[in-house]
Image (cartoon, rainbow, N blue to C red):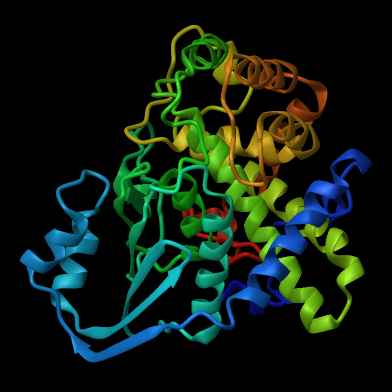
Length: 397
């Protein structure tokens, strides 16, 4: 699990000069510190939750049983489908109740991958928190979570000018606020963060069900790229990254017995994510021989995608880079630590947020630095950045 990832796993292409540049401003300290309190409260309160457990040592999917889980979706890669059909793994099932909600976790582990008690407690603690702040009691009252621990990392296409598709980058899917709902995660890679992201959809913590036409129109006119501009994906991905950092920092403070350093750990982790997300964005744009400034200067859009990569990666990198401004807008739009109230005032705040940051000096400098770093390392086979992997390569790996 990510909580055990040591600091010496930092990738060599992370420029350490940036690791001290992320400082949570005073007006956002309470927001971050509250995340610590929420996580601690969750772990303290889940000890009395009764969990029913079942284990099947040699489990094999048929196409019929797998299809019942993944249904017919373009987001589920055929390569992963074939792997799950052809391989035998261990199936673990955990059922429990939190308040009026029932949760069932289905874990399918294959060679080299495990799911232990720490993983389970992490999931239960998160769902305890989600249940605590969910805006609708009927939302996902019965939730099945499927962890299909396939070994396939996310990879960008190798050929230039190739459209980025779900098989390259997607890891999961869910539905918004169904009474009987499910989350399906089909890569082992960074499943902890993916779970948080999908939960924002599952419990309507985001604004996918709201009208954000003005926001989308502004972004379409600002960035000349072919995208559906599902901007709630950017919002979910940024918050999932923040909560992942908070969990990571929480466990570090527990191990070191230094709870007062929680904010410092979060700042360091976010600094890694800031730089790493800029590197990933650079690699994505490089497929089309572009750099960041091209996407709002070009006359005709060269960038193309068939899934929400622009929102997942590029716009998220801007939110992380300007994390204090992101938190300020979020705080003005949220009625609790997880739930957004997306009204016209909130929509205007998000438009103003991107209007101020998309082309400012810090954004241009940091995106140019990332672009130059990737170019300088591109031909060095000993560095991870020389390939097109979108897998985790930071402390959150």
